[in-house]
Length: 496
Image (cartoon, rainbow, N blue to C red; front, side, top):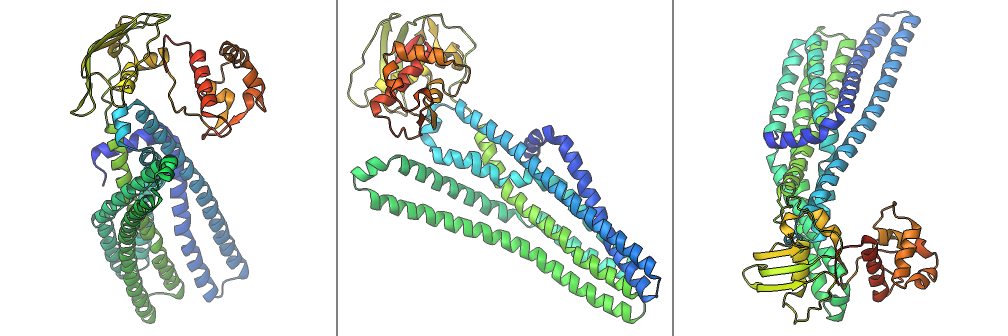
């Protein structure tokens, strides 16, 4: 079963949904009781009919059977709805926490993990454990109670049949709880292969212009086939392991059911069981398949979910190398910039070595240098996407390592060469989806930039749709949108 730390992890996300879980459990137990009652009613009907009971008696028993069947279906529908509701609530909360955590991780982490891989971790791995959150605990307990209930009622019909099927059921349960670890290992391999494929596709699709310009289509397709091969092989091993696990349980049930039915025939021939009792034994024997299949399915899902849980916990346990400051404030207005004997290296190779400079508030400084000389690195250090290896950087006289990251990044604005525009309107892309910014404030910003006529010339003004690929905007126009963001932000330092 789950280690203590994983149980704590699961409990953290299930705790807010405890009331729904309680209702889910009550519905599940009610459904179990109703399912166990119906074979008894069917057996009673058969015995009464064979004994020549009045039609009115048979009608009452039949009506009770139908009412119980309808109530069983109603309980199942509501229970399914609640289970899905709990699953979506808990896993969406987990997705939010994962995304928030990824946003706190520094640039070095994101340089080592592609966007496609991280999407697979946030969505794919969480989807793999959705059923675990939604159903595992309640359904495993419910299936166990259903299994016990069926066995108790079989013992009630005849102790010999009870012993026989209890032995088979016990063997199946022991196998399910002890013999399925290989399923989890195969599932983790398959999830990693999915993440690798997603990362590859994201990287290649983003780099299509370079791939085309350099004639790398064949190389890219070859690498794609390698990723698809790995995904196919790991997926096949995962599915095969799950199939072996489930079929072993089914084989145990088939053997037990065959032995039970053979014994029932013998007991009926001896006069020990009536026709109605034999029918009840038959129904309960076939019903044993339901809890065993459920337990098998959920234990199978559990083994696969553990792979997702391990990967999710590994991601949540990744600590950012850039630690938030203690809250030292930055002064208002324009900020001075001071680099005091700053050195920095991404790996072993230094990029900046003992660099010092001072830029007074309101001054403009242009950095020129060959590729790899550290121009971009300096801008990243100002944002604390990385921390200096040696020395210090101060804005407005305050060491950036002492300032809260959210305040630092609010007071420093960046316009990159390749501007990221999002699927939304021009208004959304300038305000970054903040509905609190008025159109009057946006008009003021565009006028200050001399972009009023440009906005007026767009098909729908501020409501003009911009795709994630910025289709319809030139590179220069996209940078104008980024400049509007800067003016709206009113920072103390601007990096172009």
